Length: 245
Ligand code: GLP
Image 1: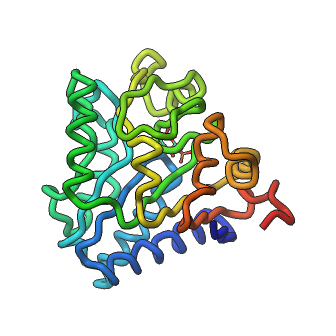
Image 2: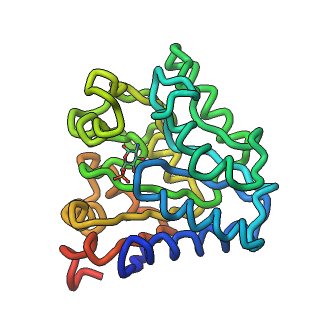
C-alpha cells in the first residue's frame, strides 16, 4: 500500500487525476472503476480540464461504477448515474454505451446484481478502481460487517450512511434505504486501486482502515491485502497517522 500525502483537497484531486490520466494514456482502451461521493468531484474536474486541454482522450475508455441506489431512476438528480453524467460523462468524449452502473430501477435485486456482475466480467475486469472512503470505513456501499467474498449485491444502508447522504435529499424519507454495490471481492479483483480521502473528519477512519487490523468491521481494511493500492489523502485526513507511514 502506497500512501501519498497531498497538501490539500486541490492537490489531492490533481494527483489522483494524474494517475488516472497516466492509466488512460498508457492503455487507451482501459476499464476504469469509478466512484461517487463528494471526494472524487475535484478529480473529475481535473480530468475534464485535461480533456479540454487536449491531453486526454476518453473515446476508447470503458467505465464501471461501484454502486447505485436501488429505486432511483437515472433522471433523478440524486442517482449516481446522474452524478457521473454531470461531473464527467457529459463533459468528455466518452462513448456512453461503454459507461456502466448497476440498474437502480431493476426491482429484482438478484437480477440487477447478476446482470452487473456479467457486465464487469464481460469488459474483462477493472484496470484502475477509484474509491472514496465512508466515515465508517465503507467502500462502495459495503458497510461494516460486510462479507468479503461477495460480488455485486444489494445492501441496506446503515443509519450513519443514510444520515451522511441526507444532505443531498429534500427530506430524510427520500434517502433510499437500499443500494446495489460491487462487493469486496469485485473491488479486490481490480488490477490497481486508487483511494482518495480528504478532511479531518476522515482522520480516525484512515488510521483504522489502513493501519489497523483487517476486519469486516472496517470494510476498507481489506485493501491492505491488495498488492497495488495507492491512497492519496490530504494532510487533514492523515493527521492521526503520524509516524505510521
Ligand atoms: C457514499 C458512496 C461511497 C463514497 C462515500 C464517501 O456512501 N457510496 O462510494 O465513498 O459515500 O463519500 P464522501 O466522499 O462524500 O465522503
